[in-house]
Length: 186
Image 1 (cartoon, rainbow, N blue to C red):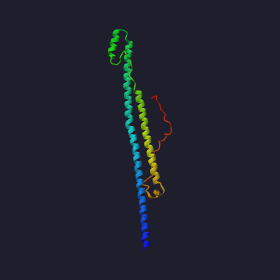
Image 2 (tube, rainbow, N blue to C red; image 1 turned 30 degrees about the horizontal axis):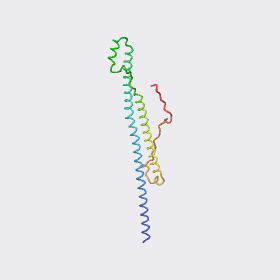
Image 3 (tube, rainbow, N blue to C red; image 1 turned 90 degrees about the vertical axis):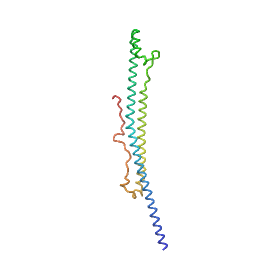
Image 4 (spheres, rainbow, N blue to C red; image 1 turned 30 degrees about the vertical axis):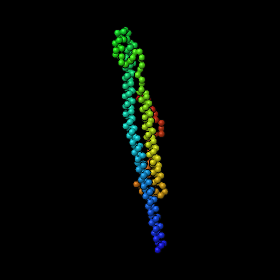
């Protein structure tokens, strides 16, 4: 009788250990799967940030450049008008028109900031692309952890392959390995 209790106890203990092990592996697989989905959400969020931000930045830089172009043209035309004035009456007439634009005692062109705006745009674009790259790398790292877990010796036999399919990491599009050609003529 004592031997039968020992055998039943050993079987019960084995069942409890196996169940606990399966439950732990299953819960870990769920956690890794959720992490993968979350990481892909981060990639999508970063793509959306780029889609929202870049057109606004480009429009802002274009607007600032156009504004500066107009100011510079006005100042240049006003300055040319002063040079073309031949007699004091013409000089007085032109001077009244541009009195607010140019101080004759201290001629100075407006400071051009559009180059700085373009540099800031380039830095923001580079930063955005770096965020996207980091999100993709994090996603691929979570894929590696998940796939390693589900493909482990015991887990590959115990976990449902339909519920826990192998995930594919982010892959570059066709031709991405080729250098990008930049054409400034347009």
